[in-house]
Structures are given as structure tokens and as C-alpha cells.
Length: 232
Image (cartoon, rainbow, N blue to C red; front, side, top):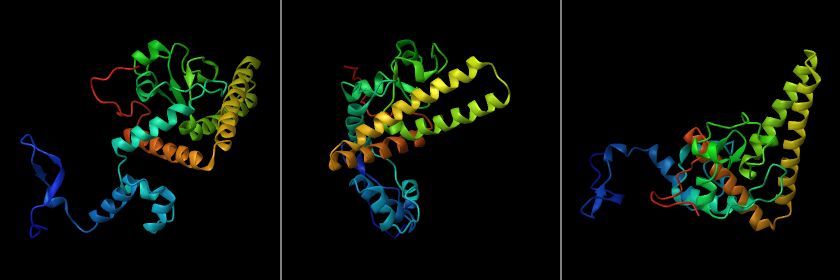
């Protein structure tokens, strides 16, 4: 590809001039990634991109592009309005900064407990018993994880019963199942009540945030806030 003339990248150097793109990174297969990235940046729905790229699964196109900072910011802007508490009642975050900076990663939602936030999600005072915690803040982007947790808890309960475990252990598992099921049901109901356009926007934000978390190998922060900003 050295026969290709100078190609400027989107970035600029210290002198303010465009930085040349590394031509060694230009090869035929790379254009497939560029094609996917351009469409993703243009907010083309993943199911449409799947058809355009002739993929069988909607998960496959996601391997061909990265979620841009702008798309993450837009997704957070939408999602923060659909945060709920541990009962599934609306508990929207006041701003994008609040969504990121006042919540930390737990396996199936956000947490706003001060000491856990300060520790980056590594110091839950009650050992991640989120279903019974008043600081638990899930949103629709965690629905799949919540429903996985419900299935896991049901399996744990059946195992506990088979082992003849003490009644309080089984009861605790059932209480967690009931709590997570209530959160899940309430969120599904709230999503179903949204106008079609808002529902589609929300579900697209779900995909963006889930992809961002998967790429980072963690839940939050998503790095959608510029350094130097403080939470509102």
C-alpha cells in the first residue's frame, strides 16, 4: 500500500496540522472494519448493519467497530433517565456526570453507596447483596445481566434444596429471586409504555452501553466525561 499517496488522519499534531495516516494499516480487509465503523458512527441500527454486511448474527457486526465517545455520551444521556431503584421504581440520574461518577460497577446494575463508589466498586458493605440494597441503581442496559442472575439464583436454590440446606439460606435465595424479578418486570413494563421512537432510541443505547462495557471488561466508568469536570 506504499504506492498510495499521503492520507491524513482525523487527528492533528501539535502544530495544528493533520497527522498522516499510517499506510501500513491500509489493507483490503480493513475496509470492512471502516465500513462498519462509518455506519455505526452514523447510528445505523445493528440489525440493519447485520444485513448490510451479510452476517447471520446481530452480534457479529459489533466486532468490526468501536463505540465512539460521542455515541457513549448520547447513550448515557438516554439511559440515565431510565435508572430505577431496587424496587424497579424510577430513580433517574440528574446528569450524565452523575450516571458515571456517582455509580460504580456491580454485576447487574449501578451502586451509589458512597464508600463503594470511592473504592471503585470494590468495597460493598454488604457483599454485593444488591437485591436488598437501597443504593442499588439498575437500568435497562443491565436487564440481560439481571435475568441471568435470576436464572443463576434459581439454580442455586434448587441445589440448596437438594443439599438439605438450612431454611434461611433457601429463603434468602428466594427473596433475591423475587426482588430481581420485580425489578425486571417493572423495567419491561416501563419500556413497553414508551412511544415507539423513544423505545427504539433506548434499546439502541442499551446496545451501545453493553458493547462499551464488554470492550472494557468492566461496567463503569465508561469514560464519557472529560477530565476536570466534577459531578453535579
